[in-house]
Image 1: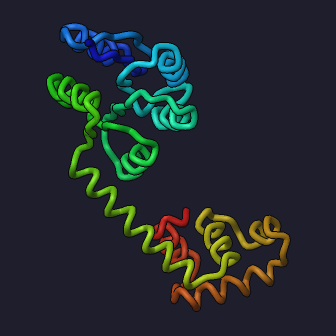
Image 2: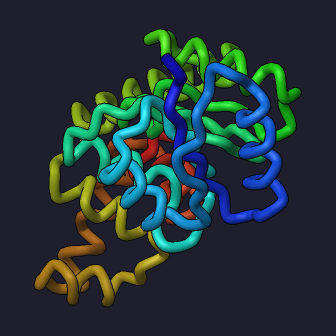
Length: 212
């Protein structure tokens, strides 16, 4: 029985190339070709394909937003994300949302075909090096988040996030409905606890631990 596909990419040349590639293979059936996230989601709802090849960057819902919607709706189609370049955040988010595969668009056509067959068979297709780096980064950030939670109070963590988001003292005070003096006291305690010398170091600390 043919592997039923929906293909989604906002670049016409890429989409046409994918369609031609899979139509040449006797064990694939292309059900729909879509040029934005909304079309892709609607095609999955309508056709219930076995596999969706989905560009991660598209108008009207990107690939991760489509994945999120599919997960919320319980749609069983297995998803392979197409991307021009892998990064830790995309890999981690894709894994969390249940993506079965993630491949670079520059991969050879035969690799895409092999990926589709393996994903249809219930396997995962994630480039090992990128996944390892992403998971290493996740563990590092989670360890940092635990360290922060053990050191700072919830209110202090909230203020750290605001400082890292470039809010000034009076803006933090307005948002938290406290005085500027209280904010300055909090910052003094935060600097002492974390042993940082000011806002710049505090912002770097927050980013290193994924607080922002």
